[in-house]
Length: 126
Image (cartoon, rainbow, N blue to C red; front, side, top):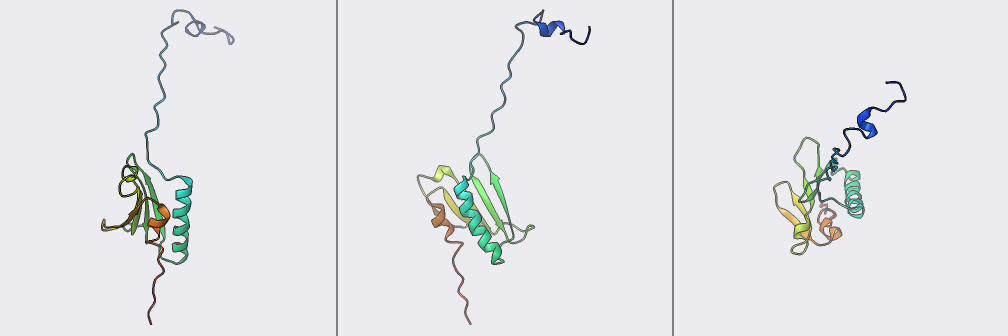
């Protein structure tokens, strides 16, 4: 066989009609934050980092919910988790803020309102 020759099976010889099309596996469905939601969360995160309260974060996307975890230090448990669970959207609201003990601080339909629980100014007494 020379350089320009095509091998017999590719030319349509004896292997014709035996090719199988294997579909590309679809990406698994995952719940995620959209651009506006991430912008809102990261704006709050940036303010709290500038204030010295928070230092690290993690984002997890699972088939059931999206979670934005906030840490004071990387090696610790998250201080807060901001969760988006679409299954709860028609009942209590898709968004919730949960502390490290599992207590739900706030749940609601609007992310801005739910995040206000974390953005409260602290009262300093003398």
